[in-house]
Length: 112
Length: 112
Image (cartoon, rainbow over all chains, first blue to last red; front, top):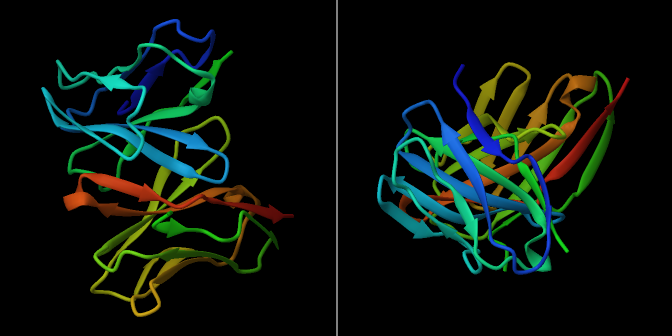
């Protein structure tokens, strides 16, 4: 089954404790991206990757890092999480840029 | 300043009637528009799209209309069904097609 998976689905952590949210897709897509969803703001793009070893900032990259060492994986790293990063995070992938992306199920992160 | 706006955070309609969801954008360079649908605890899924060379695109019960001069698009669902109850996001690819800019979303509730 074609899908985008994210782990963990739920995470409660404390300020400053480094965390990683994993994302994996099995569709051989070149394009992958991360979004955060906040009430009234829709989804805002954090980072995206056009291919392996190619990443670029989205609209809200501050406080986040990503890496793309393999085509299927695109982890999101929060080196020192803060409460304003409490949000619902989505990973997505596509075969052709930002068009028609397939989204993962989401990761709800709470930073205390 | 948000480049894509959905001014109605929620909409309630009766089953069988028409649902009209609206979206306004500010960037006249946008030339492709998408609608995504999101159920609770799931990631968004692609619904329908329209290119700026068209003013209408239809797929079953879903029709998207584009008014380029007004920088406005709308999604019509006819007839509405209870299973259509979800949050709907409009989105526009920008930045050479590498990023998606989403509106804030409209929560549609279809009452039986």
